[in-house]
Figure 1 (tube, rainbow, N blue to C red):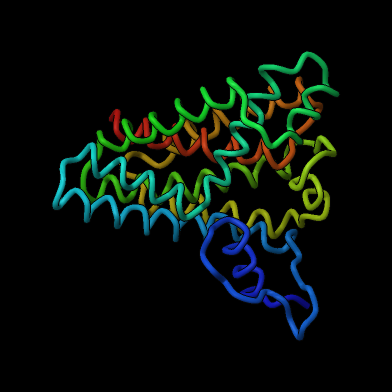
Figure 2 (cartoon, rainbow, N blue to C red; figure 1 turned 60 degrees about the vertical axis):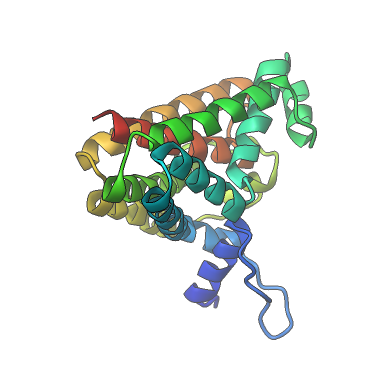
Length: 248
């Protein structure tokens, strides 16, 4: 039986560039991603807190736009732009592929195309601009919620949408326990009710809209969702949270 803390440690190693050391047990490989996935929103809380700390510290010594830029850059460094890579991949595939087979082929291609580059620029610039509209505890709260609820939205998609049968995410989606995934989603929702700088139900609704839109688009383009789609959901829903937090 897998230790829950071991699964959390696997999730940290999967989602971040934090050196977690050996994640094997007794010399045997014991990396069950289906058990680590429900911990994703918890890892998001930690990432958001670190990024929020950088934001507050930089704002104390620099101007707000620079603080926003440094905070977003910190998030990209911690995660290795892991989810942004998924966004770029589906932008290239859905924008440049004319058949399902061609789109799946593009998703496997590590090269970055025009659509992917444009999507990355829009997402990163959007994050910086949206965060620059926030200050202090509101910015920290929005960052924690964006990183935790964004990952919770990806979890919700895993149990509500069908798998495209391609990519890393599809490998463990079918083995997920609905109960454990609900546990992870609940963590993202609780974080929202604790830290959201605006009315929590509004934040949840705003995050759900792009999630449903991306799932619907993926169903139409490739017949389901995969790891790249989940990454795009995390980024876009997180961006939507930052935008609405700074707009109210």
